[in-house]
Image 1 (cartoon, rainbow, N blue to C red):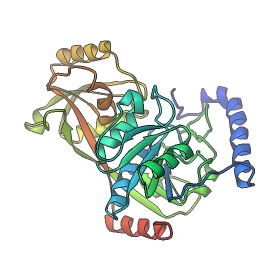
Image 2: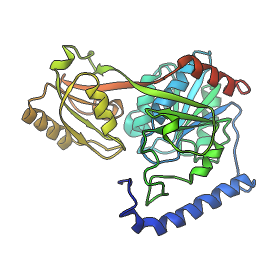
Image 3: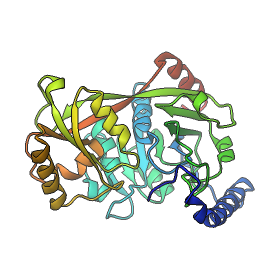
Length: 340
């Protein structure tokens, strides 16, 4: 789905946005008045979410917090819905030592997080309370990181982190389906921490003052199943593809590595790749005389185990780095002091 940056032709969907907004507000009021059931776990829950559709850096932010908690000797479990998976119920993606599910069984983002966070458990379940209770019981989790949890009011959370990315985060400022907002901006009052990825807090007119962290995306390097990419960065010509809600940011990150992007292709978010997609990308590589084909780790975990890829296929791993690490550490310590 394309999320409109302008109010025309989104205005045609505006009546549906009004209906959607009324339903969202009715639901939120029910929870605020105690009419909606909120389940609790026996361990602290930190939610990482957003108020818009599309990528705002929730996954790398979740991973940063997982590593931050690990450094404090906490046994962490990332709890996700597992969007796009073919399985149902509670699925153990990783126990922290071994990955037990592939992208089809556990979802692309949970498998990606499992790869990037050794020692951190990853569990998926649409019923987050059930999945969290299982993680506490079976894995002895001490802290739950609730991935994409801002709208998941059924599970009590001790800290709500809301992520933002880019100056166009709010698009035309309208609710779904006419705009990118999942709920009205004034509901950001529920948040405990604002996390800004690749955007300054001053660039977004939120209307609330909350503790905030500004962070940037840092590329960790190109990798495939055998070895890191080598060679002089400026001499590498690449075809880039990804299945992301906002793909151009990834393309810019690739270019920041000194790679000559000859052509890039965008698939829909959470795209399930077929053999014809691989063959098409090989054909494009030949046409543009590129040296390599580069994608995201999120896409890589779906294609590498399934297709026999040549050695010039790579994924670019990224991480999140606060602009002021010491200040971020102090802020997180203060925010979590009462629950950890």
